[in-house]
Image (cartoon, rainbow, N blue to C red; front, side, top):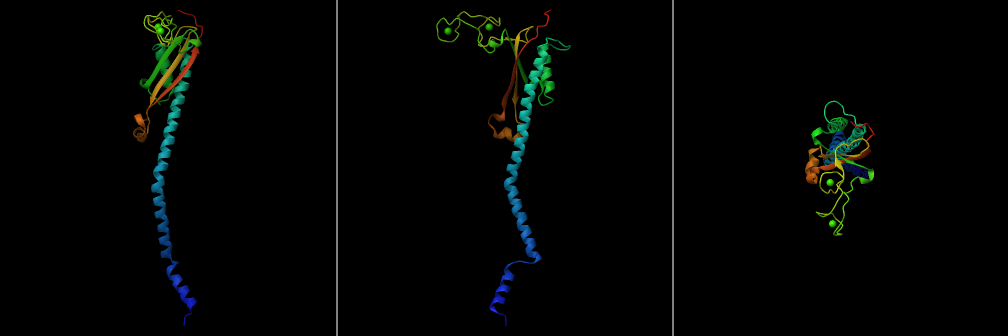
Length: 208
Ligand SMILES: [Ca+2]
Ligand SMILES: [Ca+2]
């Protein structure tokens, strides 16, 4: 006749699965849990990977804009004019070539302004503030530094300048996310205005 303790061992064995069927069911449970975990974490992981990809492209584009505008200005200061296109066309092409296919020529905004001295960069044309209101008003006398017949809040003259001139190269580009998802979730389609600026003095090349 079985004792009470033998009964207890038997009943425990019946609830604790020790056979291969029990192990298989535990494996299935673990796989199910892993599937649920992946379903929860997977999208977050994918979002992170896409974010890193997008951010890397963004930084690369900003870097090639900055190095491209420096490269272009190094060409610009020499006053050289290569065959095929004006100096400003060639300066634009140098920036495009430098971008290595990341940006195309017609998407690049290029503005070049020339000044007589570095201190004049971004400065308004001098004027006599006759009514002492701190701003230029029509009819007040002014020095037409860029010679366009009107007062300007920036005295720079458009162009790549003559020998010895100070030239500011400003390159702009509208960055739009490559990953379509980011164009949908960020306001304004995720477009960011990129800009790179460099100021140089032209070399004293002999004028024609
Ligand atoms: Ca005034
Ligand atoms: Ca002017």
